[in-house]
Amino acid sequence: MFDFHVDERISKAETLPASFYRDDAVFEALKKHVFRNSWQWKGCSNELFPMDDYVQPMSFLDDFIEEPVFLKKNNDNNEVNCFSNVCTHRGNLIFHHECRSKRIACGYHGRQWKKDGQLKFMPEFNEVEDFPRACDHLKKYPTAKLGPHVFTSLNPAFPINKVFDKMNERIGFLPLELFKYDSTHSKDYLVNCHWALYCDNYLEGFHIPFVHDDLNDVLDYGSYKTELFENGSVQIGYSKGGEDVFDLPAGHPDEGKHVAAYYYWIFPNMMFNFYPWGLSINVVKPLSKNKTRVVFRSFVWDSSKLSDGAGAVLDKVEREDEFVVEGVHKGLQSKTYQTGRFSPTREQGVHHFHRLLANSLRSEA
Image (tube, rainbow, N blue to C red; front, side):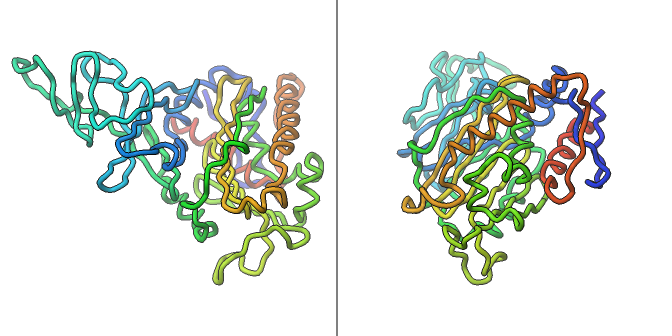
């Protein structure tokens, strides 16, 4: 039913068809077979856990996959754990809001769990046979960290640490623990388009000279580069003037080059944009097949560089991108357009994304 084919040879390949973005059944299949198996960024440990014994209840993916979970840091080793936020007795939510709590206990009938999620105590259950069973313990979900940034998954399709290893080849020298959350440069955007169209646009610099005048003024379009790796990619923007660039250490893969930005993407919907001033994280959250929320969160290292270079006008660039992707979304409702082709020199990232999506649906159909 979902046998979308994207040729592995970009010079021969066609894009995913317009029906991919229009079809309700495809959208639901993406929810089930892509997002439920995805990793998602949940926040920075410094903000998630402002004090010991702090608990953060949340949905796995707000307004899309409403699986209740909670995060809790183990004070003994600073490991962040993610558990189901559903009591294994009667299904009550265990934590209703973020709070400080030494205990993991349900307020309905008093069931308690140890810090590792194993059942600790349940009143009035002495006469229950075959208790506790495995299902009485809290479900524990996988977690991972990139510096202080916390990720979790319900059922990971791939090991995200392999992606982090690729990222650290270039950004490993940055002291991410020193980057501070900046609320003034953080906001959410509602975009009237299919979530994958937003990612399509992000994954190529082909449109920069035509859509982003400010960005085109500071980036050297001719040397703009995309590198692919398993379940992710990086786009490297080089500065035209050699200013507002990273001070790269000796032995760095880009030593001697004037790098203005590293744009990392992790399948299916996360972007990590590193600039000389710090980091902008963008998480693309589907709401429906016609509407998407894009979460922008900024973490500043050197505030003196915020107004310069490739990361200087992020809000304006975002608005320009929204105008384009909303136009594409409207155009894809036309019956005259079916599919397109890829630029082999400029759209490697989009081709990579389309193949990952097609393969995910095909393997689970």
